[in-house]
Length: 541
View 1: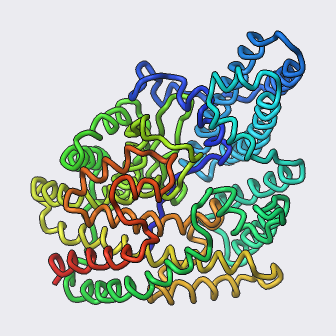
View 2: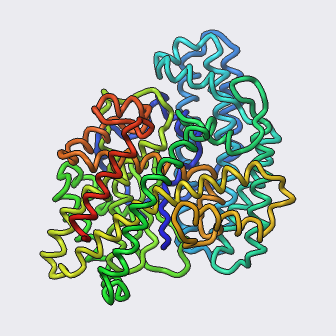
View 3: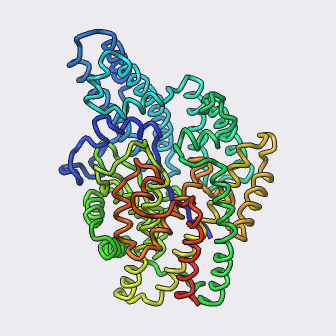
């Protein structure tokens, strides 16, 4: 079994700069008014000369006295350019992922990704200069003290890092372009080059003790995802999941063979795109009616792609349009009822854009585990609504199959994610000369079998390894937290409470404030094991 979702994180810098500057939205209000539809949003080729000039002029102004008004105006001009580049990068990504065989789209996406990285780095450097100048107090008045402190904590990338990241972008683009056709040897060569390149990037940065990072895995935990936990904490969690969740998954697999029989072979019924939209809207309204306006906003502004296509990238995600204060949902649809679960998962991300209570926002740049909790919990808490939906649509015979699909995917996320972390932990600490096709395939198979019991895919079928390394353990941590929410009697209210904190708090803070156990607490795994056990006993006994 294989299903991989993804939330695209454009760059860690985006979240740092958006926290407290002049807001992540150029439009005020929960649901922006008069914002353009997706078709009205254009890719704009960056004016590199103008953007360089604005950076240079701002740095020069920072050295002069009495130029406050001019400095603030030019800073706004720079951030208008900044948001425009972010929008262009998002459009380039979406259009390329719609058709990975389009070489023009591939080149455009590779260019804008590399340029955006360099431009964001220049903006960060300018911001640090401005906030260290005599205009610091004025700028803090425009932003916040927290924003100023966050800038001080960020390192400007040197030329060596930018060049390495340019190579990384080219390799990721190559992977996407050959995803459907490459041989095992080709995948291994691309992945090995990525590991070597990323470890070289990590070595350019230092840990809290002032020592260069020895590998990209450690670097990503601390500098890319700003995690509250360490690889050692993750090791302990995944070991406990292997001990307590693996037996439940094994038992469910046996139930699959005996309970579904021929129906399991038949699979899900085909559904049209219009039916998919109608089904998803019903599930949203029946589960959390407060989220319905987010769904309507997305549909009315054409900020989605649910089409079925052989040339689309094999992934699904939500990416933000920071310029407009909204986002886009990309679904690599199969054309059957399983798409409903994927859409509801991604809608958990989409609704979170609008569901934040400003008074509860924290000072963390971005918390990936909370962001993934919003989507994973939404899949689980919509199960009762799906049961009613399928009955209403005359598809009751698929209810158990759908419920099985979601629960099995949940267990698979917990266990395969642990295996993926085990794989990446080892790969980034292995002598590159050993990273052959056979080594990588055997290592991945061993990890997956040890946690899941069988090897259901190959490592090169997991886009995260190539596009967002060390990401997948966040799926594990967040899915523990999502399952904890699902285990609550008032899960819909608890879900809304958790989402209202947004992704700028620590997970530990949100758990404490909402009265929920942390995924790393002693009782967390036992609690979710009991929930899955009881649900399976009721539904599939």
